[in-house]
Length: 94
Image (cartoon, helix red, strand yellow):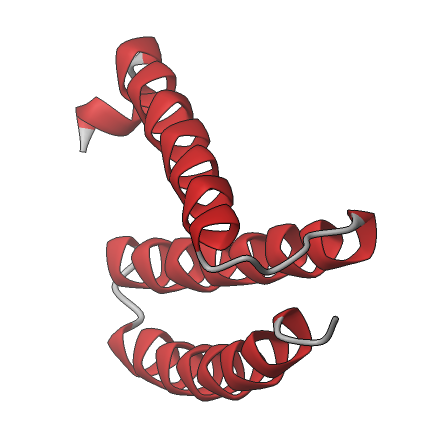
């Protein structure tokens, strides 16, 4: 688990995150879906929730709390999927 303490890991993760958002922006432009500021906030909040859910699962597993990781992963996953559907529909609003 030493890789998570290395600065290069977080640098590469930040680059990949920016590339994913850039690709999302280009994809939305290709679909001719306008993206005002409030839609970007929805997307970023959802991404932060997914990242925190994954961090919770990873931390729980590292601490030897497999049951907590399972429950947190299930709750976080269900909420993330429901929120993704709702946000996906909100992004199609013109």
